[in-house]
Each structure stands twice: as structure tokens, then as C-alpha cells.
Figure: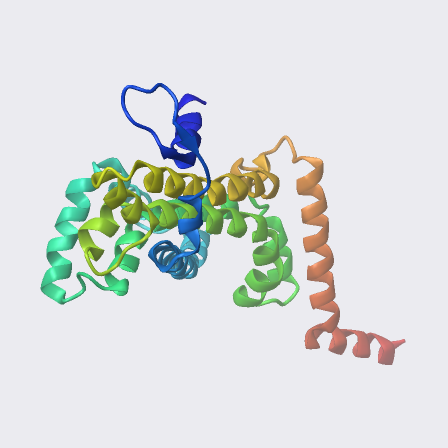
Amino acid sequence: MGPLLSLVVWSLAERWTYPAAWPQRLGFRYWSRMLTADFLDPLKTGLGIAAVVTVAALLCAVPLGYALARLRFPGRTLVLLAFLLPQAFPQLPVFAAATREFYRWGLAGTITGVVLVHLVGGLVFAVWTMAAVFRAMDPALEEAAHNLGASATRAFVTVSLPLAVPGIVASALLVFLYSLDEFTGTLLVGAPFVTTLPVYMYTASQGYEMQIASVTALVLMAPGVILLLLLERVLRAEYLTPQKRRGISRASRSDCSAARHTTMRFLASAPETRSRRSAKAVTT
């Protein structure tokens, strides 16, 4: 709590000179800077980049996580390990090497370059989360759909994808928070043309504007706290624990029951089922 209280005091300190142990004047003058373009432009840029990174990461992670969880192919373990490599090494040399290539391709100092460098870390959270979510699902539900005439795509869309929605939401929150708070890659690739709130906070602290840096830090903490509380409510433990022979929890049973009902509704509307019913009616 000490660092947090220090940020709060600094954000309210309108005048604080040495050797005073407490600010001589408190107020909200620096909080009013939140309504100016100097603060709102980095905020809008950061939110926009985080939204694009989240959507792009999910578009890659959902099918890839499903393939890693359901399919057995050579090199599957190496693919999973490859998505850990950006986090296995210090981020500074990784982003520095990426920055060199981005300058060569003309992506340095652009929104596209910042989005790509955020995807380097965002895909780690998205792919591993989605692989764990799909691995925790009971494959018997899809097998039942296949046995009753559903194609692989139809079974995925109508059975697996609805069950994976809480995991998708959790993965989206993790990637969004990572992108919103990412600093090193944004500074190396985007500066000086792309400024997000972490970069804005860094430049303010370098100029000894401690009040502005403290206000920015508190603003960055707010979405993290809110979204992590939402994540705790959305992501249940059974989505990260494989369902083995001993059975599953009540929540998982209700999810499986809902998936079975979805499968039966699909089968009721399938042409094969209608033709079988018609043939049975004729024979009777």
C-alpha cells in the first residue's frame, strides 16, 4: 500500500518543496490535465492499439489453441514452446532486435509497428489460455455431434465455441491489459511518433513532473483492477484443469448439458435426421 499511497499524495500535491515532509498545498489541478489533449491523445492511442491487438490475437489464438488441444501432429510441443520464447528472455533484447527489423521494413514509428510488437507478447497469453480452455473440454461432446452427422466446422461452431466463451473473454482481458500497459516495445518501436500512456508517464517522470506521472500511473491502474475483477468472475478453475476420469464440477456439468442441448437442436434440424424421420413414418 505504501507505493500506492505515495502515488495518491503526489497526484494531489500542487506544491511540495524540500524539506517539507508533507505537501504545502493539495488540490486537483493536475487531475484536471486529464481533460486536455496532452493526456487524452495518448489514452485514445493506447486504447485503440489495445483493441486492435486483442482482436488480432484472438483471431490467431482461437483456431491455433483448438488445433493444439485437439490435434496430434509432429512438432506440437515445439509450437507451444515457440509461443513462450518471447517471455523466456528479457524483453529489452527481444524488442531491440525487432526494432532493427522494423526500421528496415519502414514500420518504426507507426501504429502498425506498435501493434505487431504488442502481438509478440500478447499471443503468448492468448494461445496458452485458449489451448488450456479447449483441452479442458470433454471431447465426447464433439464426437457425439460427429457421429450424428455434424461436420468438423459445424461441431466446433455449435458445440466447442459456445463452451469456450468464458475462456475467450479471459484471454481477451489478459491481452488487452498487456497491450495497454506495454512500455518497452512501444518506446523502442513507436517513439517519438506513437505515444501511449506508459510512454507519456515515462516522459513525464524524466522531466521530473512527478504529479503528472502519478496521475497517469493511477489512471493506468484503474482498468487493470476493473478488468481483473471481471476476469476472476468469468474464468472458472475448471477451464484450466483437464477433466479426467473422476468427473467434473457442477458448473462444468451444466456447461456440458447446455452443449448437449445445442447438439440435439442441431440434429433436430439436420437434413439427415428429417429424412430418417420421414422414412420411419412411411414404414410405420
